[in-house]
Length: 491
Ligand code: CA
Ligand code: CA
Image 1 (cartoon, rainbow, N blue to C red):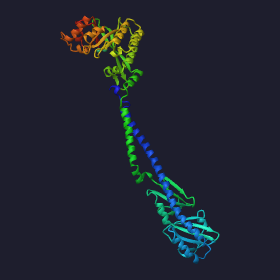
Image 2: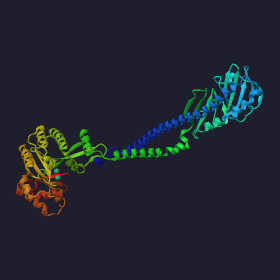
Image 3: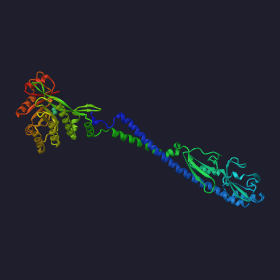
Image 4: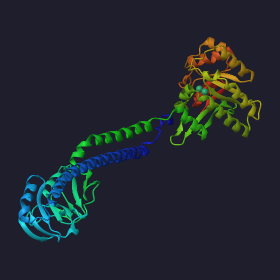
């Protein structure tokens, strides 16, 4: 695996992270949805409770108006008052009954039954004004809201029909619930009057009357399961799923993408994952090391060994070869200083044509040579023939500066690419490194290899040293020894 193409986040870590992102976005979405639902319900309940209060106050107003009228009759005997009581009831649709109470708190006259005798306790009226009753003798199946209006002559009791009250309560959203409270007595939408606190609900809106001791409560018990609202918010839920999926997918896309190669290399350089590998150059006759070519090795933390072929082309293209070569030179100088080198040891680094015209190469080579303990080390720069070498003024200047430092220039991979004879002449190279492909066919009984032979011959005529690369067999060694090639590069 090439580390340049490694995803930013490995798959094993990406899966739980993508799931977590999906869940987080979904949870945030649901929380926002909840807030929106809650505020929607809040608004509905507030509006609903106000509307119901308005309706019920209208009914109580009607009773209050009747009470004021009837109070004038409070000192009259029932026989004279009863007709007026009945008229007051008939002319007012919400009023169920009108009654008169004498100063001793005895209900003595009723629009329904005429003369009566029932002791009334004024203390049962909230604020002395209102009482909510589940039923009375005359209407056992219907609750009543009784309004009391009193003077020192007596009192008038006007009853509002409970059916109108429940009807008003029912105008609230059918998925919610509404209640009328008078003191500690509650009337619900089913017409049930009870002394109990209402069930805990998600949203309670309270509308209190400014004129009467009563209040309306409207609210929703289980907003999650409200069919109307779930329809309302179905689009929202689809949007949440879509958004969560999008967020997770974006993360996945981003995390699967490889980091920029420059970033990967920068980090690798920082943690010292690059190291030089020295490929020996051997003298054919003495069979001793006379030099080495420095190859870049990358030991990646996750991918292990990465061969130069996997990253050098991209590193050349991006310019990363410049800091990489500098790093290799520093490391090689340390190694060479630590060992006992033969006289005139040859050490070569691979550079691309672009590096030759890049300003820092001359400086890096000077630093390298300065760091070396031994002054007789021969520094060689190998320029591959695979890429086109443009011999312009900048290149000429750079090559001249390098030569002044005593650095040799070698054409690498000779026999595979662009180098033509005139360029060889113009470049005034010091060395030809014959590509391994030209020697790979040499076997035990090979007598001649026309291409290899002519390259060797050409080098000799140009007075250029030859190194043949990629020697793997004794037969190849013997063949080149026979053709007077002194230095071979072996694995
Ligand atoms: Ca090379
Ligand atoms: Ca080579």
